[in-house]
Image (cartoon, rainbow, N blue to C red; front, side, top):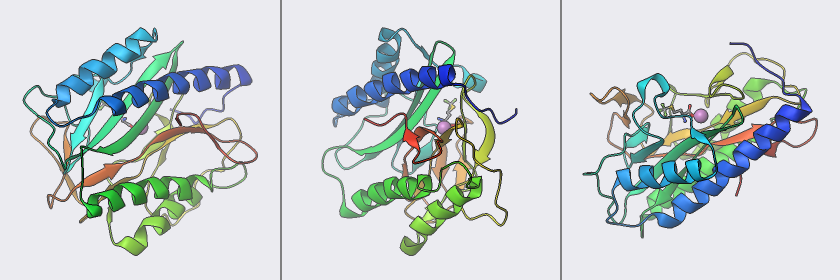
Amino acid sequence: MAVTVKSQREIELMRESCKLLADVFQNMERAIHPGMSTMDINILGDKLIREHGCIPNFLHYNGYPASICVSVNDEVVHGIPRRDHILQEGDIVSLDAGLIYKGYHSDMARTFGVGEISEEAKLLIERTRQSFFDGIKMAKAGNHLYDISNAINASIKPYGYGIVRDLVGHGIGTSLHEDPQIPNFAQRRRGLKLQAGMTLAIEPMINLGRADVEWLDDDWTVVTEDGSISAHYENTILVTDGDPEILTLY
Ligand code: MF3
Ligand code: CO
């Protein structure tokens, strides 16, 4: 799948798609509390997406069975919501969701604390978020794709956290996953030249411990191999000639 550059009309549709998704996220965040199940979050998110007249793009994507990915503690991404998985005070929960509005996809993720969480967990979440912002400082027309990857890598390196390598960010538009792939770790090459009108989902996934991950028997849930907790921060952004526009911010 080729890298696409969006027209002004397409950019407007991407903006609207992402704005609606950010609203869904804000409402999911408010609902999080100890004692709820990961399925409760999925049910709420699915309902909010449909109330906006949109379609959850994760549902049935390559057979994924839910609308929202809900990944708790050592689950990195793609956690499958379950009625018997109850959130506890002190957990961290990563929500990843997307929707389709008039044919245009949006995608975002955040990690939230459930009640009071450890200092260590707070720092991991904050530094993962910061690495996204350090990365997108490089996301402007004329720069190269891997300037973003290298900046995320440099942002995380001082802390010794594990940067997940098995999953990457991606282009997004009329498909959830378009080219290019966007690694969150240092690259030797420069990658493609960025152009105004590219829309990208940039999504560092950072482990408190080592970078290695494995897949559970459900074939979806990605967990850290060493059992350490993991954080995720993702926005859909628009490359411009100046500063990038974060389309999914709230
Ligand atoms: N949000 C994921 C991504 O950023 C995609 C999840 S696909 C699903 O690429 F099937 F797991 F939902
Ligand atoms: Co994504």
